[in-house]
Structures are given as structure tokens and as C-alpha cells.
Image 1 (cartoon, rainbow, N blue to C red):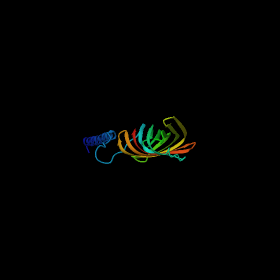
Image 2: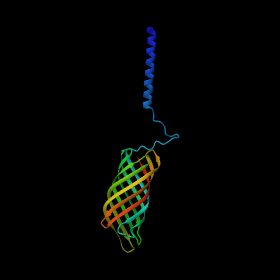
Image 3: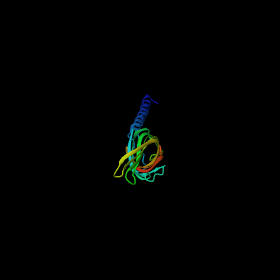
Image 4: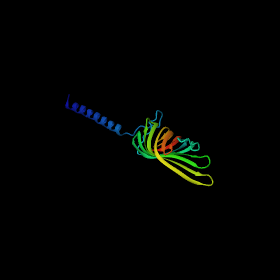
Length: 199
């Protein structure tokens, strides 16, 4: 092989190697593929601050057989925290139920707690927490008014299913339970809520 041919072969091999390197670099730094077309969703990537609230209905049940205290109630929930990783969040959460009491007055049973929330998959999550509960009876029979409040240790658990997801937001359906221990015994909240969550 003459020196001219050897030079041509070497230049050809060099050009192939250079083009291959450029192609590899372009593949590494190319924009991520679009998920707007047909096919399965990529799920939701959660990171940073977690903030949300929930609204719903439920019931309060007390262990002292107080007929006036137990029954249907409206519920409200608020939480704030941060993602430890894409499937685990640490939160401060407060939620409770309130109901009108026969004869005049309002009963509120609530809990403020630290909690961990874990996503089993892209849409289903479980949560558990421990904190302090508070039960408050505000009364007004037309002649007298006032309130009584007790506090005690509380435990809570919940599960939810995200029915709507968009970048940084999820709408979910939740089932919740919390039990608080008081001097008279205890009180338990059961609730179904719709949650609004930002990540």
C-alpha cells in the first residue's frame, strides 16, 4: 500500500471516530423526549416543598357513649413539609372534624402531628403520624355560653389515590382515621376528603 493510500485510510478512520464522538455527545445532552403524545404517562416527579389542604366529611366517635358528641361532621386538613426523595415526604399536618351538637353548641376534634407520607406507586400513597389531639366543646343554649377543651396524645393514618396529576400539582381522594386519648377515654375521627397538593 502506497503512503498516499495509507494516509487516505487513516483520514477516513479519523473522520468516522470524530463523527461517532459527536453523535454520542449529542445523544447525552439532547432534550428529554416529549411525553405529550400517545402512550403511558411518565408519572409525577415530586421534589422540594410540599404544601396542601383537604376538604371532606366524616364522623366523630367518643368512647364515653356521649350520644350528643358522636355523629356526622365536616372536615378540614392542612399540611406542609418537604420531599426526602421522590417517594417519601416528611410533613407537619393538622386535621380535624367539627359538628353541631343537639341543644346548641359545636364539638371539634382535631390533631396536629408530624407525619411520613410514602408513595407506593405513581398514584397511591400511605401516611402515618403521631402528635397531640384536642377536643373542644363550645356551647350556647341561649342563656349560657362557653367552651371546654381537653388535649391528649393522638395517632393518625391515611391513604390516598391521585386522580389528577399535572406538573407540580395533584388532586387526590383520601380516607383518614385518627384516635386521640383524653381523660374521659378517647375520641376517633373517620373522614373522606378531597385533597389539593402542590410539589
